[in-house]
Image (cartoon, rainbow, N blue to C red; front, side, top):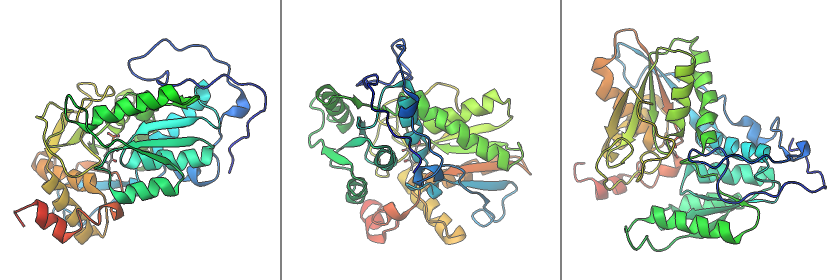
Length: 356
Ligand SMILES: Cc1ncc(COP(=O)(O)O)c(C=O)c1O
């Protein structure tokens, strides 16, 4: 492992609560950062984050008049695209002097970001408290604990709204206030979440020699969407961005509704969202995700997570509008093993969907 060790002299105290590069923000304060404090990730497990394969899918839409490539983010060591922002938000916080070895990272996440942070914290010598709610699946809790994370369960929803999200954020804030040297990455507002995906987009565009007509990207915190959009605009690429959101998610103005499949979608509009990041938004239902996942599995032998199925269904919805010969890329965000009890379980599907 190449994490440089700490110098023993005094360092700037880690700041609690918000990171300086969040969207709505205070003026950054100058801070002294010791070089030896900053981790260098050149070997060890975190060095395997990114540079995921981009493969051509020729079977999922066998009669397609366009080429389709899939960016397999399941190849990241924590199993998802969220390894990228997890590492980037932490290393940037080290750079700013907001955290140091021994700091406590606190984040509300019931899924992939939590796993990515748990893994990165284990390597970087940070404590991690993951704030979850009763809807978090047991497998994810077990993974978090296996990496050494502490899991903080918020058992009751917010009394005013009846939602868990505000209750989880309130718990994050109260933990930050009580734990010295604690830091909240705050993925919904942290620009370093989005910036991690300049690299994601760079990898896709480079692999395709700059020719990409359509990008299909699932949205949650909007980190992927914003990072890819920033890269596309700043490189003057002629790529249309198709945001894929969950039906019942409010990001693009849909009416709030019940959603069963985690990953994509959000119950509030993230600070990272900006109107116009996307050219088009396509909403997909839980059922669309299931159909898309099963199709990826049966046609391409790819066992992917729910949002990947949503992306495949979104491509199908959009297919007629895609010009002949176009090149499309789909970001497939995570692997499917954590969905074996849901999307890939016939009894679960039958229980929740009367249509099959
Ligand atoms: C499986 C999956 N798909 C899509 C997303 C959305 O990505 P982003 O948060 O970058 O918008 C996430 C985010 O956690 C995810 O876990």
